Image 1 (cartoon, one colour):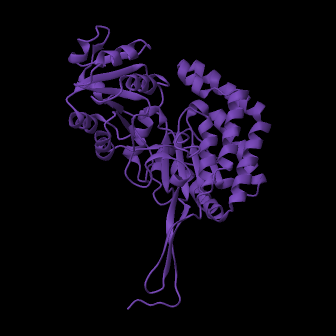
Image 2: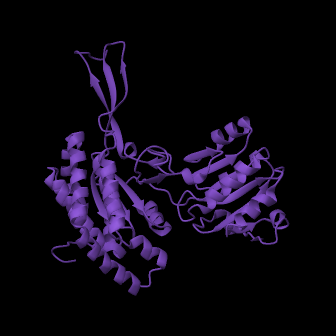
Image 3: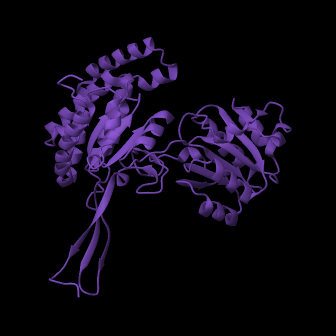
Length: 421
């Protein structure tokens, strides 16, 4: 490491100290000040669009030489339209309701003490992400809107794009009167910097990984800092025997094939053995170009299916592939989900409200649905505005994480001289 970029632990220590100072300023910033800073950041992105696109061209060229897939290059690419959408998204975050200061509950004790639970920022967020340069803007905007300082560590594929976007955003933030250290970008691609962030217990308050399975697994394995993340989206749809066939066909095709590469896509289809038209469900998927990896019972219904192996039930395909099997009723379906699910999103299709109620109560996932496509697993669809991701853990936030998920709370207690006997 050069003098400009000291060893990773020293670098991250210096950055977190600056972030902590900025977080104290942001915690006191008004709703109007934070909104103005984001609007100025969006304007700066538009003003610097040609420079950002030129920086992105360097990343695209390097990515092509490195053999990145067409899908990865598409995620990396910025053009006028995509950059305009990034700036528009920041403007949309700017007008979201500010959760900081919301009174979650208030009570007056018999002794006259008034106790209020109030939302406050988490403090310093570390965002570790891969090839999508728009995450630089999205994560910075969401973190700042909720009053947090943000330390960004992007992937090497998008290094030039990330630096150009960060530079433009910081210019807008400073112009609006908030500190430049509100949003910092780790200036080195040394992987040891990621390790230093994961070890920064007490300096970084929460880590949010955005990227592939290997990145998220590393973060969850190594972090000494609380992590907000999901590893897999192994999402199930259970078609109960009392499901409406037309509804079941439509939901399953949409849940699997609308967008196969998102974390809300369905990956496993469970069909009740007493459902009257299982072959129609399989045919509907096959006819859209989806490969169906089936158990023996379903393979007998359609020779176009292929045999599922044990690994298929634990696979997030993110592709036009689904695993499917017959189950002996609600309990067997829920047992399958408990063994093979990832606690992300699971759905039941049925006209039996009592069965649906049991499924919703007993399936332990962040999002559980009745008669709806799993593709609705998205913060925007939940009316939350932009999201930082889907959390599948049990602590703090769960499901789509938007601005409220980037806050915590404290108790404020008002007295008139009370002492405890």
